[in-house]
Length: 175
Image (tube, rainbow, N blue to C red):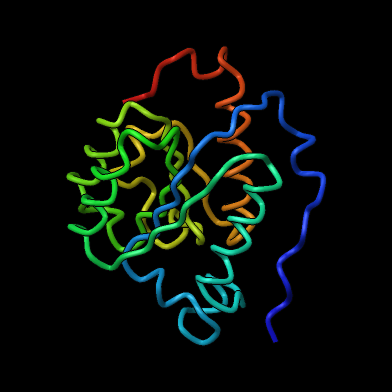
């Protein structure tokens, strides 16, 4: 049985700002197979499925006072179209490139060209499974890996706090 994801009611107390930021969460190829029995439990844990993770993230974002729209696709072209379609209505991006770790220069460039902060995140410790860096790493604002669903939450919280702190991002993205 999959343990429930924790509910964190005071998450918004961490914020220093009040802007209702709009964030997008992108999960790339193979993440749709995240379900009990679908991926290696030693690496990916026992989370029920990606929909459960996305629901938890949307609820956590709401408690932070921001909006989060998850998107998942196994197709690079669909991911590119999503980034292009939401360039103007997104304040920051969270991305787990998953199966595109080493080969999606086009998606990396599309995200960088938005001019918005990008947080790279990985369910697994990708360095431990042979990917010390990805094509995304050189142009993202931050990175989290190996903490499974908790890394998603940490990435969300860190990115929102960075958006609230103008001295941190200083109006620039590391692209």
